[in-house]
Length: 568
Image 1 (cartoon, helix red, strand yellow):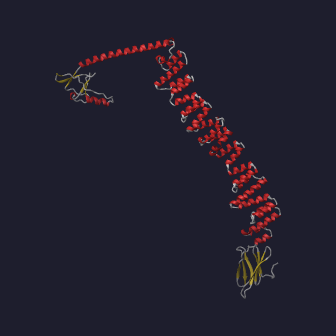
Image 2 (tube, one colour; image 1 turned 135 degrees about the horizontal axis):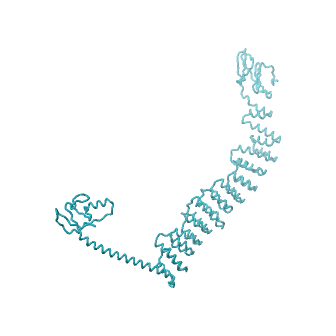
Image 3 (cartoon, one colour; image 1 turned 135 degrees about the vertical axis):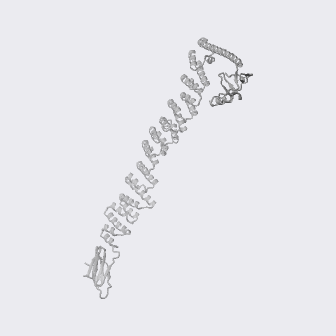
């Protein structure tokens, strides 16, 4: 049926959505989907020109009108313009969306939403409403009147994803959070999904109003708000979780901030955490350590850590070394104090000595006195402790003979004042290479000579032997001097005759041309030649004086000669 008064067309052709009929004087276009008349057009042909047939080229999608004289192309304008409306009336939403322009699609979604809402498919309706231009208030009102919270959340979520304005995003995300809280359906995934949209202070306030600490913790973890996470763990006294989180975050700043609480709660585990962070600055840990110490708590873990950074990490901070020394002194751990004194180059010896003196730590004090090169004070302290062996070891260390002698005299004097037996004192003096005359003034006036009689006799005999040796040496010296004087007198009488033709045994020139020496062996040398030769041999400079003992000349034999003294 053609919805047109005329029938029996000459020809017709089809497009995708239309039928085109050819009559003798006009073209008529009918919609194939609903058989409605779309348009008609009068033909303006020549007088003798008649329409013959309509044909279509399917490959090129063109349409042609053939007459008995010409061929005309039929151009279709806006062929698809209203097709989507027809599909929409038929509720064929898929095809309607396919042919609908983007600017009109909201009408299709709105109709779908209303139909789904009417059929109580609320979740589906929420999805469609989010795609329409319908106002947020109207849609929300429909869901809230029926108390449909889950479809409302779905609708708000879709609208939130479409928003770009910050304020709107914050409002929608906060509304969603309140709906989730009312349904008790909050979880970590929701926080992760909503993270870009949330206003952090508002979210914390809402969560705190509901009093759910676990939700606050989850949100803080999502936001990486570690300070709030630590506050929650600390309120719950969960030190192990704090330690684990700090270790995972690898943050030294968090260690400095929370170490005092951790030390109070789990000192051993805290020290283990510190040891894993080699880049910690111990100075920055000292404030929390001092606060911890002020509470009179066990400082053994702290001492172990400071020993670790000094021995293993080679810390060179004098403050750290001194503080460790102070802690060890407080605990009277003398063995570790001695080890620290022995191996540490960075302690303040004077400060540490005051600490040891205050706590009456004798052994460390003695070692510190020795480091300060005060052996007398170290010796006095060891004798005060009645530690004779230590006192002797202190004396043995000295290289200066005067200091060594004075220290041994101090030891002997202490033994005498301590009423030790005379034989022991004498034996001790011998050990220090002291003589009886050195220690005799140290004995009291009332000491019995019988106790030291034998030693006095030995000392006197030794002195006597020394005197005899000295007397013998003096006699030998006097005899030697007499012999020298005799030799000198004899030497003055000795002479040798030197021929005028005699040559120097070094330069082979005439010997009498300059100052010379003649030796008993018969060799003769110019003074200059002899000095040069001696200098070549790197012998000590010898001052050669010209002999003034030539007494006379004598003429003899075949020529002149000179009488000179002979060098021995």
